[in-house]
Image (cartoon, rainbow, N blue to C red; front, side):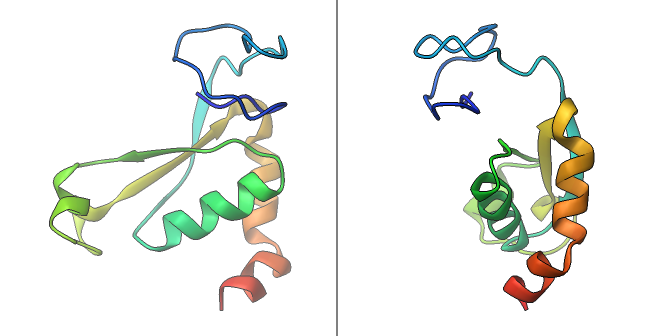
Length: 101
């Protein structure tokens, strides 16, 4: 896990950051399912806006084999439940679209 406040990395299941005592999000929600390299762009953009992101891959073999399309390459972008609406607005915003095109 990654602390939203101090960006300290720590194990899953902890309820607050061991460094700064900031509460850890309890629930992560699916923001969007995408394909590489869009996952990296969205993750970087949201983290630069202060929203933590977890990347979940449907199949680990997708990256190993260099797949960038089809079901084996699908990547799920997860954000804390309390930031889901903000994250949706940010990736739908003009600033994200113009930065990635």
